[in-house]
Image (cartoon, rainbow, N blue to C red; front, side, top):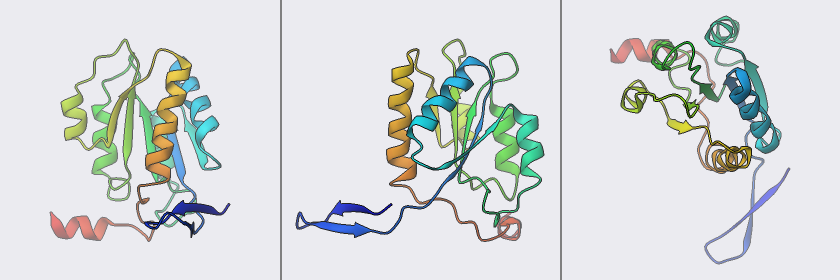
Length: 169
């Protein structure tokens, strides 16, 4: 899909094909199903992998190397209000040499009051309350699409970074 943008002179200039993202959504329940549907409506052809919970993420994460074509460029995580506050999962991801560079967007349902300060302290890229109405969630996904898929550069996928993290410790 070729895209065009506006140059400083107001004319159109061609962009190269935008990169294909691998998005892993770790979510369950009604809010998780709504997140999945809204993301599928607005992911514009990106690869979406649904994972039911942290255990599914842990299992899947062990089977992918950073140079795999299915390695995630973006993680989206829905805090399960029955299980935790999200900080344990975020710590696990950010302590992993291969996954710590992957941006994590943390979602939380309205009946959860997460410690937003802690979540950002552990490395969340964004912390977002799941809107009550589905139309609001679709709008959030459009905003995420506009930023994460069109503006931000995806993390590199050129092999494990563990040697770099070991060097800076």
